[in-house]
Image 1 (cartoon, rainbow, N blue to C red):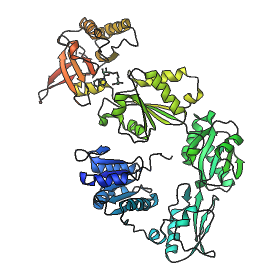
Image 2: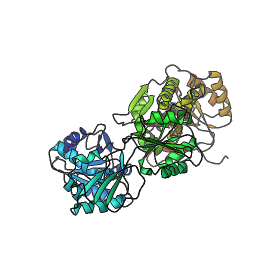
Image 3: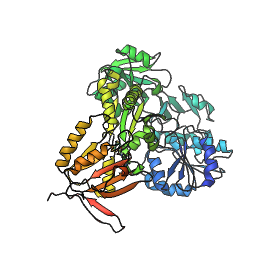
Image 4: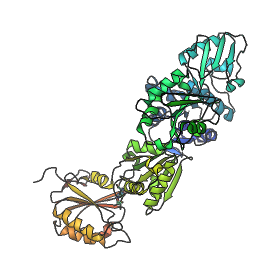
Length: 563
Ligand code: SAH
């Protein structure tokens, strides 16, 4: 499915010398960011490993404009080249802006980018593609809204054209008006623009305009096959299909999702409940309608942009950022953040989740406004947007996932319930702190929040009594705050009623964040003043032990077996 960010190029530089040129290129592409080597340049996005970063961009189909030697780029991407049949444009631009060299992605429009950049830098692009040189355009790279039927056949067609034959155009190809093609009304070669399903004959370049939507009357299990059959019977090329359209009431129907995935087209929803109304709203004046197999194909006179048709099924992903450092965030959460149109969360965490592109909308709120934030997230997602709500650590541990579900359960809005809701886990503070210390949670343990904001203190005391009596290792979240100054002291008293004074205690503060500290102490020595709201308190069980590390510290662990 199309990715709205896929076409924003990344401008990659290695040193300060390239920054000025990079900024000039950046000005051409709204939303583009300059990626710079950490420690060497001040850029919008910092990377530490040039090769890894470039390969990641390439694999994500991000157009790459690298301001460095072409050779470096080629060597870096070489291992990936054979495996790709579609690739993003990749260009080398000289640091001083004196040369623009399109390297890869001929069909992805690399020469167009090269021309644009070269024009802005007032130089000549190093274009080597013969068809482009001759005709001033790549006829094999039609603009958005049109698809080439067969690339191999197309290449043969272009070599005939380069051989000096003339050509005629059948159908509407407004973008070719600018091209320097050898046109002749009686030419043997033709460029044919049609939604008809047909084999291109040897003398023909066949291009399909994306003008057809499939309105789904009845989502049945074999839907994808039904759409294909309806297209075949109406003699419409599969490439001409823009999207599937269904009633908003069907938004969460998995059959529709599956069919869209199988057909490789987006799925759009319109608030109407009969085929005619759906078709009318999808295409203002359909040229033709074909109904068969529970599918109505509606054909427009001009190529359609699926984003203009109804809305997508909105997505709401609740992600855990991990304790702080980006390398401890799960890849699925990173991807969701990259794809998000809206990001919501407590300001500190939203900042931690960046960097973001300028078009991504950040909604920062106060830490206490969880339910309101959850409702806002559903409002956005139910309108078709891709929304991410962030929590630190794990979103299901004293964080946003439960608030989001609470808001959803309380809502009777079917559009909220139709949102594609997912929750991606993260490394919770207790686990991150435990890992720094060793393995204090290596045996049974109990996680508690000491905050009595959302539960009565009596319950906390009762649970502490039982957990301490059961000899569980204990991990305390929200151990203390200015509004809750005495609770931690009381909690420690309860635990001390069941555990000896030399029980090992681990304090992790700002784990994974700048200024992180890890303190080992004992239950007898621990003072509430050592703890603040950015601290995780882990109290060992009776079996938790420690031993010296060579660097002067100590490893703490709770053995897997019980004595
Ligand atoms: N969802 C979060 C917890 C939120 S409750 C998670 O899974 O980690 C907030 C409490 O978590 C803080 O009061 C503190 O006790 C703990 N905490 C969160 N991040 C921390 C970090 N980086 N280092 C130490 N403790 C942290």
